[in-house]
Length: 360
Image 1 (cartoon, rainbow, N blue to C red):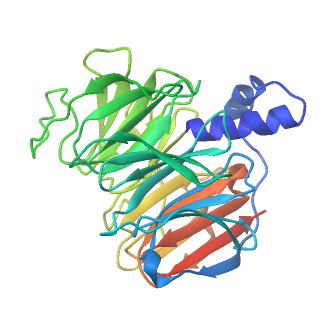
Image 2: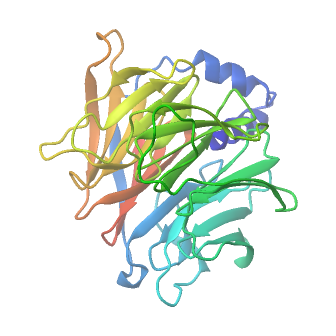
C-alpha cells in the first residue's frame, strides 16, 4: 500500500502539487469508470528463467522489474516488452525471487527477496547487487515499506516478522512466529503455518497487515511489544494477494469459491464478495486494487488474471462485476502488478510468457 502512496506523491510533485495532497486524493477516490483493457505485448521469455515469480513497476511506470523462479531479475520496457537490463543472473539451484519493491525515495534502488532467505539491494542503473539481509533457512515471501519510507518489514516461511530501518538496514524489531498448525480463535497469537503477504496500512504509519495460509488477516502495530493487536478471520492467502485502499482490505484466497473478498479494516467484517469468473474454482495467488472501482486478480484455477470492474449502485454484499479483460495464460498466474492506477499492468506466472497490458 505504501507503494501507491509514493507513486501518487511522485506524480503530484511532478505536477507542482504537494505530497500531502495525495492523502486527500486517496480519501476522495476516483469517479471515472474504466471502459477498456487490453494486452499490448506478450513477451516470450527464455526457458532458463523458469517462470515469473515477482513483478514491480517503478513509481512513474517507466520500467517494469521482473523476478524469476530461477533467481534472475530483469528490467523491461512496460509497453514494448524490450529487455532493458539484466540485474541478476539465474542462481545455482534456482532459488526463486519472491518479492520486488522499489526504494520509496531513491528510484534507482530495487529490493529483491529470495527463497534462500536473502534480501538484495540492486542499483538498476549499474546492476550492482548487494546482499543486505541473510536469514538462513527462511523463504522471504514479502516486503513492504512504511508510509513515511523510514522502515520496512519482511516475513515468510519462518513466520517471524522483522522490521528494519531503511537508511541503515539495521534490525529494529523482531516478532517471533508461532509454529502451531492450529490457530486458537480465543488467543491473540503470532503467525501460524506460513506468511505470504504483508502491507502497511495507508492511514496509519505504524500499522501493517499480514496474511498466510492460516485463514486469518493479522493487524499489527509496530509500537507494540506484542505486535499483533487483532485478527480478521477468513482469507487463505498463498501469494501477494492483500491490498488496501482507504479502510478496505482486498483479499484473494487460494480456494475454489468466495476467493475474492473485501473486509472492513476497522470493523474486521466481510463487506463484500467479488465474483471471479471461473468454472473450476478461482484459487487466487495475487490481487490488487486499481482506480475506478477496478481490481486485478489471478491464480491457478483458471490459469488467468481478470480485470474486474465492481459496478456501483449494486446490492451489497455481492455487487455486480464487469469483466473488462481476461489475461489467459498456459499455466498458473503467480504474480501481477500495476502502475498509474492500473493504466499499466503486467501478468506473469509459471509459463514462459509475460503479458503487458493497458487500461483506459
